[in-house]
Image (cartoon, rainbow, N blue to C red; front, side):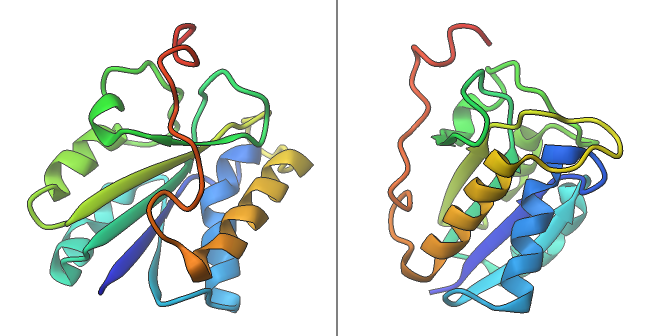
Length: 159
């Protein structure tokens, strides 16, 4: 089974660098049999590579403002990404990326990490670093949603 981990974010913008940090950790010491792609702030540039892999699972990890406590992690239904007003620092909203890949990917799981500070040249907060480490540790035995809860309607009321 081919599994792709697409890490999204900008490492120069504080907590938005969560995805690239996860990619860096996985490239230094792989966890499981993931194909790791550091999508940076333009993950749409990786659509062709992902399509060619035709993964059964595409796990997208990104810092996402969900109005939770910093470092909290939730699974977000890819079909809900467009409907939620989420902070994004990317060139293209992630729902467009997911829509482009639906026919070529078995399952898409979008994992959001709640950032605290997103701004140029800010350091990543300890809460987000800890969240990245937790996800990294779970990759080797990943199944389903990796043990993470889905973002609920109650949590999205303020978005």
